[in-house]
Image (cartoon, rainbow, N blue to C red):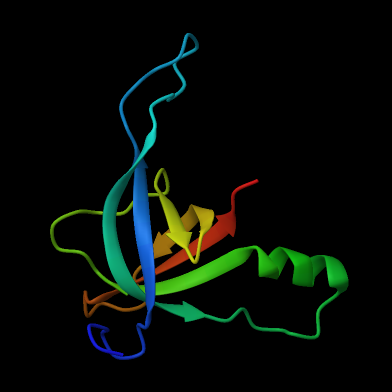
Length: 109
């Protein structure tokens, strides 16, 4: 697929909530597009799990992206993929090469 980076063949968009505070200090601004990047969607291991766990995995996403140079994704951001929106639960670098990030996401209800 032209424009992709190797196995990163899925287009994902990072969203960040705009500034705005409610009466209790919670963020109330709209979600705005931060950046769209190519990602590798990694399947969750253990296909033979119970029905409840499989349902959880169906609403979860593990992404591998090139580490952005101009911005930093945080767990306060969200990701959209194929029309679904996900909250970012964790972000980590798999090794010290500084090129990749793994991002664990779960579906927003």
